[in-house]
Image (cartoon, rainbow, N blue to C red):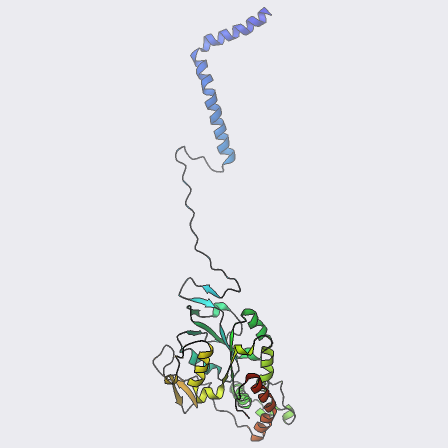
Length: 332
């Protein structure tokens, strides 16, 4: 026991005698070494990169503010545009028909109005990215004559906006059909005669499958639209009066759109060669301008017997159309 105690006691006495102050210094450094090991292990295990020197830890960079993003909700009336002024909107008004009725003339006349921005081409579908930019108070206008005779168009337009104003330019369906045929003939020479296409086998009943004839059944097409839009949403423009009194018809259109009557008779002159009115000053120009060569082209000769048969065919449809619209267009 004594030896054991002496052994232990002797060892302690020996270290104290041999190390003296150095042993005490090593003992005092132990906590610092332990802390350094812990910090080193943390840097190696917890951080993928080297630990920065003390006192030189870089401050986090300030977050870069992102510009607000425009919402593209389908039901939104307009879309802010980053470059350029104004917004791209779905059209508030549409010229929905009819082909060869005078829609291009009406569009060009309306584009003189400073509160109307119109797409020059016919998109045939609703794409806001194609629309021109408009400022508050301006109306976006689009023209696609095939809408009036496309069965799905009323439902799709109503889904887009039930408040859309609809403009239909109508013309004597017989004259319109001949004009339609003249346009097709200019692109496809060698077509059968107008009479051969208008009547089955040239002598039978009227062939309503031929688009030139079918488009003129205005009452049937309008009936489809009235399942989705009330009559108050429509304005029916006379293609004949658009030629004989363009300022008068333009006045009605401007009233319908809720615009001041800016486009007046001072903007038009009658071109006897073409047979219809032209603009004294076109949009963006100080020079007079008429519509292109495809407008006012001469019609092929159609036998009077064919014309009379078509007039008789359209008469009941025309009268129904007069009743539906409350307007007598004087085609009979």
